[in-house]
Length: 346
Image 1 (cartoon, rainbow, N blue to C red):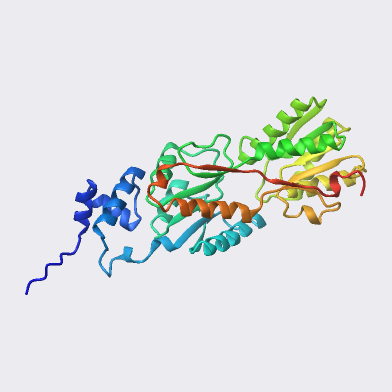
Image 2: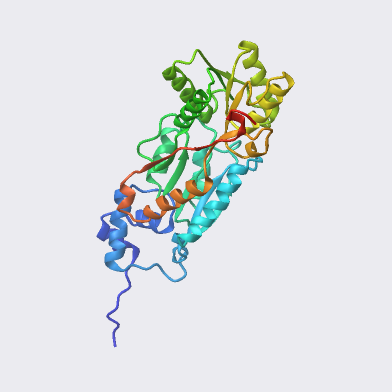
């Protein structure tokens, strides 16, 4: 008695989708990359034909159950460790597992790292940190056309319109800090940070700082940069503050690139006999150490729980091939947490 059931093969899917068998293989295995249009065709063909790989085929393992997060190497930054932890929490809530990759940008390009990570059977990837000031055309092409959805946390000066991202509103947050300082009576402000030419966040924050100060017509607003060393330590903030007050002794408001810089700035203010907040008010970014400084420092806080929740929501959306043809860039602005460093008295 003959068996009328005929198993659907990969070549049948390729024929129905109008693509090559190699393209179907890349889609099923999660290797290489394909355009969103081609991915949609292949997925529709798989659904129509009810295609299932062989039982012992690697793609039988459900890659859709794992989201990957790409983190920088350990640098002592609490934000990234919290980001990884919150990503796992939100992925689990959505029915996914999470897998963290700590990347070494010193010896590999972003493209090399992405090619390695996309060999894993992941349902999606969230990139949260990269030191480069911009993507190359090849990197943009790879991210846009990867068979595995790739979402990134963007602090680039100009976002890439073809890529899905969580967009950080650094300039807007810096502008809010300037408005807060001005409302507290500050008229002569300084921004302390690393060189804008090598740090995207510093470039955005410094630009937002200067633009808002100009809009308010403040008589003095200037950026003071110090080169970063191997370690980001309070000495950098102390040196930047020293340069600022050497240029203008009557500065009454500081915005710091990070709370490590703020710690150094407070060190200089105490050494030079300037009271906080009596003579100088201080605002910082990050909120890692700012609650524990003396006095506690007003901070612009990017909540890892919110960032990762939005990231997981986007990665879940991108599981639908049709949705992958729609690019979304979701903006998040750090929230201002007011503390004694900018209050009338402490």
